Length: 243
Image 1 (cartoon, rainbow, N blue to C red):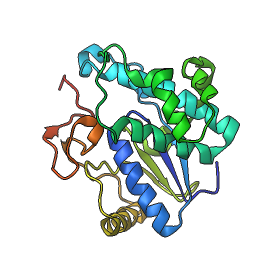
Image 2 (tube, one colour):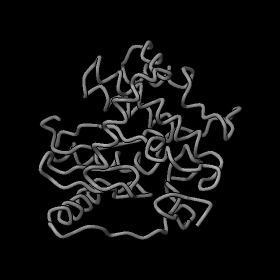
Image 3 (spheres, helix red, strand yellow):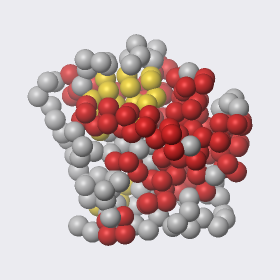
Image 4 (cartoon, rainbow, N blue to C red):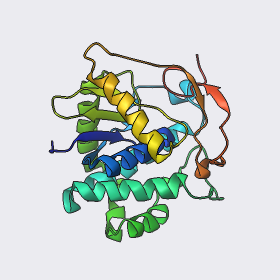
């Protein structure tokens, strides 16, 4: 644990976590908060799930790519410190979600983000050594990712996804979300933050939820940032095919 003002648990392949992380970075800069960027793996969270029965075809490859990238994040923290994880996540999100979609041979069985070719410019943008890409296939790092995933779930319960924010650790409360599909402006970001913190400070508050979500307004997903995305009904926190 650190002396951070909040812990942000992320899977780097989750677009909603990415949008929330950008909002948190805006607030942290304005309020001088220190954020510790920590790990939660959607692949480990769903390791007992029948992906073919429950998820769209591309989900298993995407979640698996997230686990591979979290191995790199774990090696980055071990060798370069927690601040470097924040830089790595910023570069991963920018290359995954804030750039134009990349044409290529990606299939439901293979996600390009779990490859050295994708990771090379990410590491360069983050100011990190190219050799960290070797951690993509280092299964020995899964124990670190698993332990941190369990740490996050111990704070919220298990029927959650990403992101998870722990306010004022270690004593403060943690919640899954907020899940947002649009990035608020700077003043709106602070207003939203204050409302979320007010809820978090009430000891009896447990959940505020709806399953209707807009598609994330992210360039990398083919969405225009100035237009609302198509609204979809998500079940149990994910766009599952079986209800």
